[in-house]
Image (cartoon, rainbow, N blue to C red; front, side, top):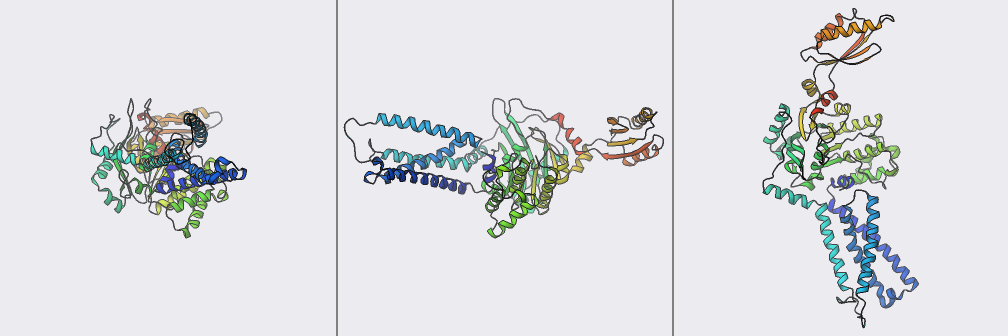
Length: 529
């Protein structure tokens, strides 16, 4: 399923969208067929216009459209590119139509006489063909609705609940962190429907995803989490950690192998359509329609979200203004830069304020000004009481937006908590930046004396960088206090000609990178990021 289709599915309007697309396709074909019949009449093509055969021909053409349009929709699932699908399906229609027409025509040439009842079920009547095309359209439409409405996924989930699922469980890389274990215990003991009413619109209970194959890939491993109203939760992880797979399960784009999740009290296994009506989703790749303008796109999503018509314009203008898209609002989306498309995708997720919002790397490709505007919009949305789940590779973005975060490695949470909590818990020591005043003839000696002083006073200190009298040290001793470090440096300021110095806690990025050793890539496995 394309990202555009999945984004629209999140509005819960699948059946309506299929019906509108079918009606549009039939109307387009009908107008083409009408022009064709006008040509037949104008040029007096007797085979089609004699004895009021125009009605017969029109019926034949319309039933052909009824049969072939659902088939084209079904075949479109085989492609990820619209251009590729258009080219190959056009060739398929030409070849299959010509070949079958010639074969049937040659094999059904009458030997003696003609049968004048053109709707007869016997040759050369076309009654059997009309019936076949009518049934074909019905069958293909049923298949299309089964796929789009995710009936297969629902059936899979029912069957999975009726028999014990054999879960593929890899050995833990290390004992589960206490914060992760406490969150799991809290979530498994709660009643999801009650919990959603008292303040946690998103709840994950042992959510698991296994991709089958010769070597089964455990992409998401028993995630348990509750995200409250007014909370922004960040999933941090390396490529392949399982972040995007988690998002796809929560939005109904992937089946769930084991466990469950609840959004606003509704299960993603049993009530996926109601879930999709209550979420906003900004996928990893832009889910925009190139032939629409930015204003038209946001207006469409506002209406799909059920915003009253009298408020649609104001709501759209607010999003355009907050994301600095006003100068481009009436341009076709295909003319947008990558950053503007990303802003539009984020706006589509935020518009209307759904209870739960998923943002998959929303600021990728944005310039610094646009990124700050997006952060402001996300912050306002969070403060209005919405639950926001975000993935990002930017530590700055994480610290600016998130109230809590989890570092995800190989489908598991290795740590969980607020940014400050994780820095205090996993950050070892401090970062020291110092500028040494050096005399022209003694600069090397002055600098070396200071380095010897740091390494002897703070054993285990690591020199990270050195440049023109500036030194960057990592003080690894966890027992050091701020007072000890500042007191030592103040006392040594004159002796070692320290012009200036700066002490800071270990950054969130350094904490994140400390988990890099645990991430592995499964060869031949399916990408799960």
